[in-house]
Length: 250
Image 1 (cartoon, rainbow, N blue to C red):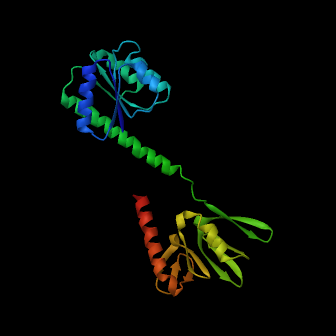
Image 2 (cartoon, helix red, strand yellow):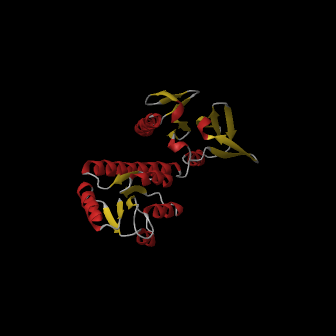
Image 3 (tube, rainbow, N blue to C red):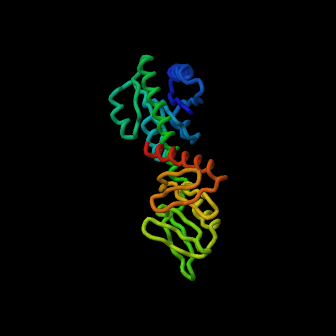
């Protein structure tokens, strides 16, 4: 977290820096004596204490330039004239301090700004997660010379019968000549790993499991066999699936 102070009064700058170090010793503190100096550095700042009445480029002009550059710095204006504060909110200021200010007011404002900083960080993480590559929702299987698109979420289970793969869906079945390992590979890229190979001849969608024992899985439509060696892994996979579903439901 980088906190900057831009003020042409050295005593105010020193006072603010000391208070910040006491409350947030891990923070990086940068000090600027004028708006022009701050803008010349052109580096991202998380929180900025910005004096409005400075010689040269004043605080309001400096803030406007920061916003023009697309900076989302959390700005706290510092002023001796409270009337200037009304203009501050035109540039999206977070808060303000009127000189001379007491410690309680300063602490309240700074803590609020830090909370906002961490809230933004959490929101950025959520956004980044949302922007991660999404799992495919459909697969394509080839039947003769025709490619058929199947919605992965609609697949209840697949089985091998008479050298064919039969995909049992919520709205009907699709049969084609193929390899179960290839279908498993396609579905491993969908639905966050909701599919599990219970047996060499069966691939199930955990979403549609109703119950199971050591030999059989009962699904919403049909049943699948479980190879003895796969049973413990099925139990773990189904538990993980339910935990994820519960977490998503919140």
